[in-house]
Length: 501
Image 1 (cartoon, helix red, strand yellow):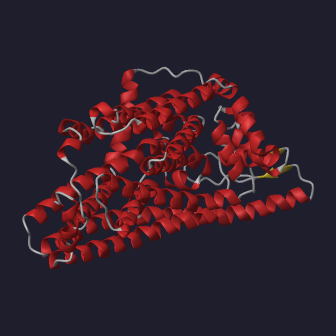
Image 2 (tube, rainbow, N blue to C red; image 1 turned 90 degrees about the vertical axis):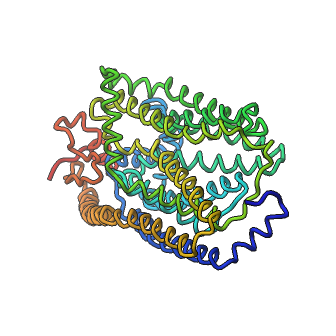
Image 3 (tube, rainbow, N blue to C red; image 1 turned 30 degrees about the vertical axis):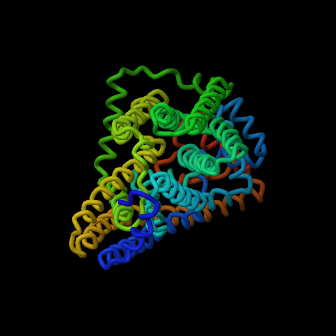
C-alpha cells in the first residue's frame, strides 16, 4: 500500500504487471457478464410497467387524481384518509394523466435507484481514498437492484404496484439523492452549497415524514446513529457538517411524522381500527417470522458476492493513498462501525414488525411490501461486508504474491455465485411477467366492454375481479357498503354501482 502521494504512480504502474492485468481482465469480464444478466431481468421488470393495470388502491388514487386534481387528493388524504400529504401529492402527479404514470414509474424507479447506488458506491470508495472500475460499480448496483425487486415474496408490489412503490420504494430513492447532494456539497467546500444542501435535507426529511411512517422510523434510526458516530470528538468526521446534516434530516422527519400523526385523516384512520391487543411475545413472534422468511432466501447472499468482487477490485487494481496515522479514526471506533449494521438491522426489523402488528394485527407481518424499508439498507450492508471481506482477501493475495491464476480463479468463483443468485430469480421474473401480461390482456378486454356499456347509458355494470400480486379487488367482502375497492372502481368508471358477472 502506498505511503504517500509519490508512491501512487508506482502503484498505478504495478497494475500493468501480468498478474494484475489478468486480474483486471477477469474482473471486467465478470462484471460485464453480471451487468448483462441483471440488466435483462431489470429490463423485463421495467418493460412490464407497460402492462400494469389498476387494482386495489389504484382505483381510488386514479379517480381522485382525475376528479380532484393534485392538490385536491392531497387535501383529501390530510383530512379524511391517513395524513400522508406527500404520498397523496406524488399519487396525484403519477395518476394525473390516466394510467400513463403507473406504466412508466417502474423504469423510473429502476434507473434512479441504479444510478444513485453507483454514485453512492463511488463516493464511499472516494472517502477511503480509492476507486474501482465504473463497470464493476454498475454490476454491483444492478445485482442489489435485482435482489431488492425480485428476491422477495411480493415482487409485483415493490416494483409494479404504484401505491406500494410510492410508500416503500420511492422514499429510499428520494433520501439517497438528497444524501448524494449533501456529500457533493460537502466535498466542494462552498458554504452556500452546504447551506443549500441543509435546506434541501430539511425539505426532504419533512416530505419523507409525511410519505411513509415505516421508512421514517427506519431512516431516523440509521441516520441518527450516523449523527452520533460523526461527532467530531470521535474523530470519524473532521467537521460538524455530517452531524449537522444528519440532525437536520432526523428533526425534519420527526416534524413531518408528527404533522401526519396529528392530522384529521390519521385520527380518522385510527378510529376505524381500534388498538390491537398485543404482547411483547406477539411482536417477537412476528419478528422471527419475518427473519425466518428472509433467511430461507439464500439468494440475498448474491449481495455479499457482488461486494466480494468490488473488494477484490479495490485491493488488486485501485491505487490507494494511506491516511497519516494522526488523522485516522481510532481503531476501536472502526470496530464499532463494523458491527453496527447488525444490531441496527435487527432493531429496524423489530420496529417494522411492531408497526405491522399494531396496524394490521396477527397477519400484519405478511405485508412484505413494507419490508423494503429495512431490506434496502440490509442488502446494502451485506454488500458492504462483502467488500470488506473481498478487500481483505485481495490484500492477502497481493502481499503474498500469489500465482497469477489465484485472483482470476477467485474472481470467477465469486462471479459465478453472483450469477447463480441472478439465475435463481429467472423463474420468479418469468412468473411475474406472465401474470402481469395475461391480466393486462383480460383487463383491457373487460374495460372495453364496460366502456361500451357506459356509452349506452348503463349505470350498473358487471366487473369480474382480476387478482394479482396478493392485492384486493372488488367484491373482496360480501358487504358492498364496506367494499371500498368496488366503490372506488365504480367511481373510476363513473357509474352508480358495479356487480359480479
